[in-house]
Image (cartoon, rainbow, N blue to C red; front, side):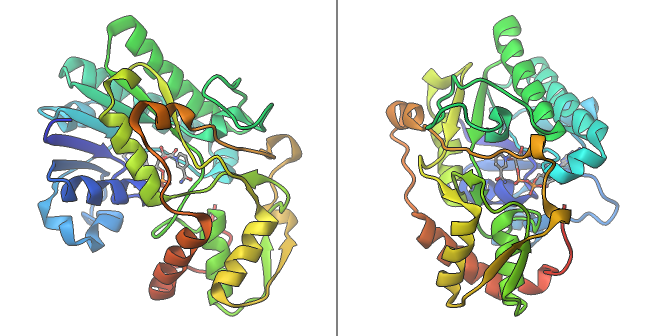
Length: 325
Ligand SMILES: NC(=O)c1ccc[n+]([C@@H]2O[C@H](COP(=O)([O-])OP(=O)(O)OC[C@H]3O[C@@H](n4cnc5c(N)ncnc54)[C@H](O)[C@@H]3O)[C@@H](O)[C@H]2O)c1
């Protein structure tokens, strides 16, 4: 990978960790942050590397923003997206505009400016409930939410640009990610924030679904491994741990890490509609292991310990009583 990179979605959870890793590795890092009149850069504002970044305010829904942002870089990491599943029930068209049209704009910009490498960020949600486990990259796609449908659309568009125009696309498909700076809509921050506020009866969605949870540093390492591996061009590649934990067991483990006993209660207001609930996701990441030697370094308990420590220092940023979508 050459020295100059662009990250879209850099101000968010995974993007801010990827930004730090790329700066630390010596890259010239440009970031595309969604325009706001205060010039706020999300999590980037709190990073020591803030002043090393070439910041562009813009919007992936705007082709001109994308053309200007990619101009002159060698690698683009496209992470910008709307990602909350419940909000995709409320505002599905905004997901099409951001996730599908936004990806279209990035693809056209990369094509026009002849960028050497483009990583598109997918998600395990594109599969819906597993037909078999562990799930390899050939598992059938099944959208159980407008969010998942928008990500399938974006991925397929990207693959079509590879096949039709040789746009140098690699699809990174992370399974669920957790760690410092994750938004409160996700399960790990929700549980930690409620416990830190003194609650011992936690209000959550469905407790039976299982997920394959990867600590964010391992996910970032997966992005870097895929970027460095030429043979993964034009392909989808998973990043996940090949292990599974139910929401109920996850809550118990977080309670143990935090030294408290908690009871999880299914709150109907937080449950997904039956047909939309993805019951089981377990990653088969052997492709990335074989191609690039990537392996997760952090087990769940270690990752949760690091995440809890970060939330203890930052819990004033999270409102445990509000149901974040
Ligand atoms: N968090 C997970 O567990 C997970 C799992 C699999 C895949 N992903 C994917 O990883 C990527 C990053 O997710 P995250 O968890 O860091 O989410 P996040 O919400 O923290 O970050 C997304 C970023 O995209 C930006 N964005 C949204 N709309 C934009 C627009 N129109 N123009 C420019 N920027 C815009 C947001 O401002 C935010 O900074 C997404 O593509 C998501 O689908 C996340």
